[in-house]
Image 1 (tube, rainbow, N blue to C red):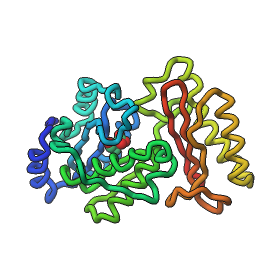
Image 2 (tube, helix red, strand yellow):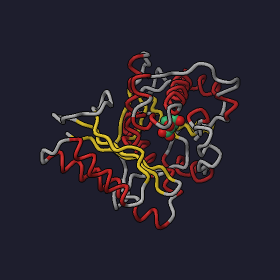
Image 3 (cartoon, protein in one colour):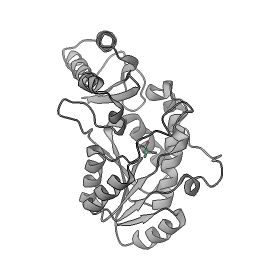
Image 4 (cartoon, helix red, strand yellow):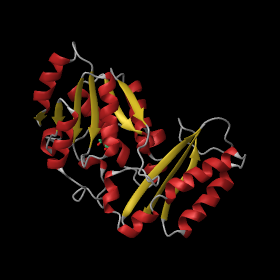
Amino acid sequence: MKVIKDPVKIQAIVDRIRPVKKIGLIPTMGALHKGHISLIESAKKEAEFIIVSIFVNPIQFGPKEDYKNYPRKPGEDNKILEDLGVDILFSPFVIDLYPNPQTTFIHIPSLEKLLCGKVRNWHFKGVLTVVAKLFNITKPHFSYFGQKDYQQALMIRRMTNELNFDLKIRLSPTIREDDGLAVSSRNIYLSNEERKRANLLYLSLKEAEASLRKGEDPISTIEKQKLLIEKNGFILNYFEIVDPETLKPLDEVKDRALIAVSAKTGKTMLIDNLIYE
Ligand code: PAF
């Protein structure tokens, strides 16, 4: 596996590779876990040249967020990627991607302030901007994202289509621990006690799904789950049942819906979602 930090160097390599091999890109912020591994495995099924990027992107973190303390495990990550047979690890320094303060940003105003964007209204422009840079630098045919970050993946797909990036976005199912907790790099912040209760969000999504199936309306379904989550000591950010494309709340569920939740336990913000069909 080649480890490359310089965007110009990797651009020169992919210019040679792209005409002869399908390139798959898995953008990550490192601290790799089962979720990332499943994305790499999906990529290997259809792409012939696999690039993983590891970059903790400062512009998607708020001033009071965990940018400095975000888990970084370069040694372990390298070993995982070597073992998986990844071709290139692109792990630029901040100065490599942002040699000057970034002044160009990508926004999707109709989506960026909904769900997770309600309290983190800077976050998605930082994500879209860095992902657009990664696409231009690594020129993939396919790029892989997890359903756990559904809103992020939806917005990246929208950006890709509307800005005519020449690649396809693939969405992979959320990888879960045995008790249902969605795997995330931030789960390591959970204390033992918090970890034991952390699967409540998944259980409450499943309960909401069952209520909708029985014909209960979204508003009372949401109220019930909000009470359950708060009664268990979580600080609820949102529990919503929304249209999976517009992310706007649904008064009535006809065919598809996204059931999405975000809540804090201790210092850890957890998110999870299910698609109701
Ligand atoms: O999901 C992530 O890890 C990040 O938001 C991403 C897509 C790598 C952009 O920094």
